[in-house]
Length: 90
Image (cartoon, rainbow, N blue to C red; front, side, top):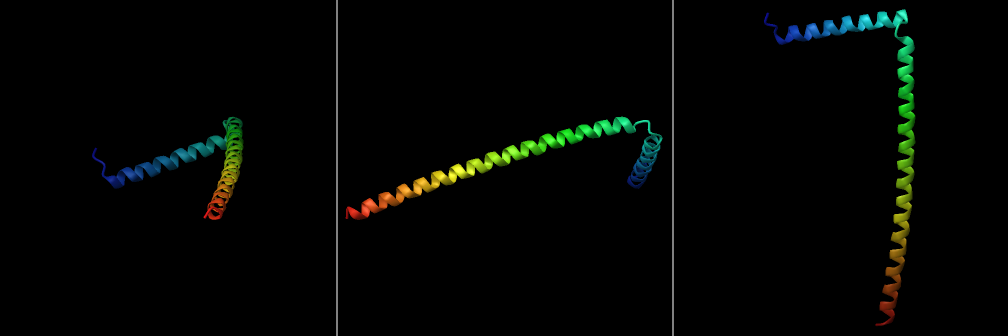
């Protein structure tokens, strides 16, 4: 049997519809609902960990930016002092 591309697409769509209908029927019966809820609750745990990591990274970046600004201002102040000493020496 030689299927052209359109036939393959329609078979894929039909298969997806059948699989979705079967999944919906199983969920309605409640057979997998408790297990699904438990699995999804682990998803929330993962989300919480990711949010915590993002907050930690954000705080670290803010700390580094503040430290970099401090170094910049110190270096700028030193450059101004050097320029003032150089202009007095002329």
